[in-house]
Length: 436
Image (cartoon, rainbow, N blue to C red; front, side, top):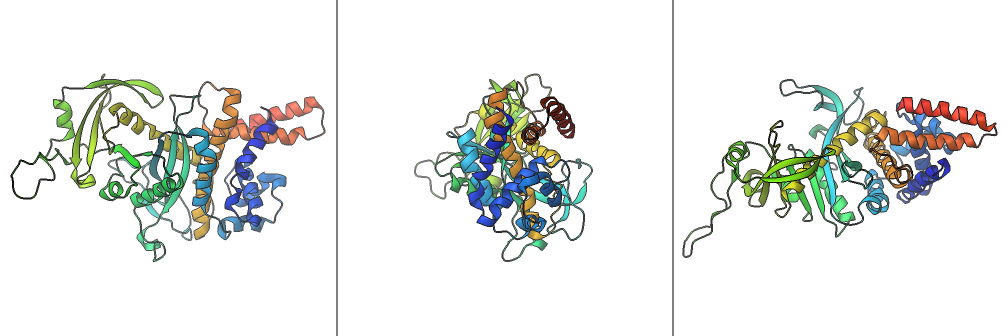
């Protein structure tokens, strides 16, 4: 597929999302999206507009107003991307796997809206807490395995919410925890895709009574469980003729470490985890985690490395019919969201956006996440089938491939000798790969 077809395919994706905007802002959106993919430095609006070249025909202030005052919603844009592009491309049938997590993006300046002191999970250690002036974002991604790389997980950001401290909330925007923000986004996705079933994967910080209780019916949760979690056996059957209120839970179970040490029945299975097929021993049982799920039964899965080089992992799911190997694979797929967050920060300017007003803050960072998802979707749909790469490329490599196609199309229009154009293209490609 030539450069012109690559660029046309990406621009067709952008056009499919323009219904989310009013007529005056549609052209602004396509120009900013084009400039965002071509911008090599920090994604300031001025630099993005200059990168867009002839696509940006309006005054610079129009592009600033796009984030500050224009009538459009990041949620509507993400939902349009999911329903019109992503689901038909990678998940036309079957259960949809979602992952949820949060991350901090460092900021500078006291006037940046909603910024505050937050713990940096990357730099902090169990004995040392690192606090930064930053924004905290709760992100939902769709986790997908595509035929080209069956052992790898491709993670597409599909929605994001800014976490606000109580001091930044009011009657219009009430305070919500990270878990409540996650449920809010999951509900929106489930409402937009009626009839579909979902599997939500989150790390061990998210399971709570509010999360399990408020998740939609068609969403099952997979997460890590604390090794010292207060688990209970199922309530015994009520004897005939016995008076009084029936028991809601059985006896308190030992800690998971003790259960793992005493377990004798282990199921040996091969699971796709972290890009490889790995042999794991699995021990599962049904219990009640009263502090989190109340009377709702959960399936606990203990994952053991036969070589004992890694510590036992303790997982759980609200889906009692799920195979233990599937639970282990799903939790391993969660790592894709960590990779997506890193890619968004390193290659798409997610942590470097310069907006400081309230609406700009709420829109620019999600826009960067959307661009990451669009580039990945474009690569999976158009570039990967044509080029058949043996290993899954990084998001930076996918972005460089799209940038190269844009530059090839631009330079081919020049009336210069073919040899000079080829040499110029080689220099441009070297520059783009160095920037990646």
